[in-house]
Length: 84
Image (cartoon, rainbow, N blue to C red; front, side, top):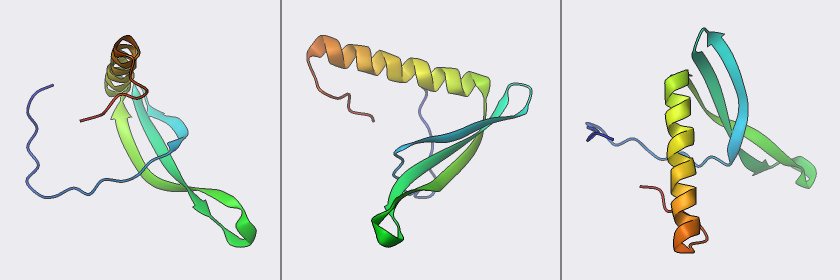
């Protein structure tokens, strides 16, 4: 991965899962991410916290990168793989 410029501070968003993946055009997908929130009456709700429209190539790159990190963590005997 090449060096990336961050001209302004971009806040981190805590995500607990992928909510929905929709194809919006050939090889272009809208991916919704969610986090859990405690709702009324103690019901746990999934709240959409981010949506990105990304090309298929980006989805594949993320999947390959995470699979590689998980494999390395297993080899090293770590319980999780730290993400930079």
